[in-house]
Image 1 (cartoon, rainbow, N blue to C red):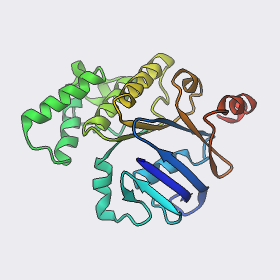
Image 2: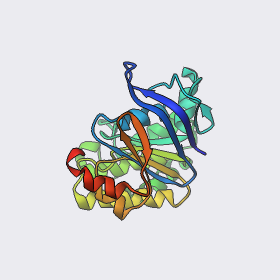
Image 3: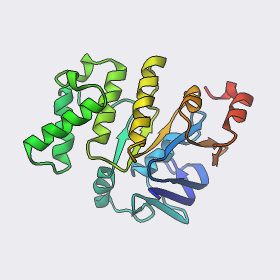
Image 4: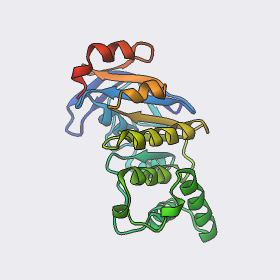
Length: 237
């Protein structure tokens, strides 16, 4: 398993619990959703996976072979190099082109040879349909294009896992659909994708494993989430 949580307590940075007794796992190539109302703990759960928030209590909390219950600060960069993270606000460097954004990541993660760096960037930008925009700066791109660049950045180092926090938020339906197709293609190559979303129609069009944050608990609702959503549709926004 890439992620294995057993009876984990998930707290916000201020120590307030948001999810209790969390049992959660993600395996190779799986496509996993985490859904729930605003403030239910979705983003906080994701932050424990890339160690922006630490886990202090639990029977087991493993992420990519790292014990999150005893993870040391010096080991966080190594953990994050094994995964790709896609943030809601993209977090691209505003003063640099798409090409320079991706170069920065590769150089920061140990790539040395210029030719290999350029070949890798060309490959991922081709994969996400953004090679022709490599010299553009983020402000010159649409929201969907910036998200594609953010995904390209996330897959640069061929991670086992991509963690995406609301990757289709604030995108029009057609653009969101394109982002979902891209993430599905990535998962089909063996990279697991874990994403939060409020866009419920996507769950039917792109089926996956579904967890729901509700009343301080994380529930596997893969087999019955449609019924839950119909009953409580007005509570999701």
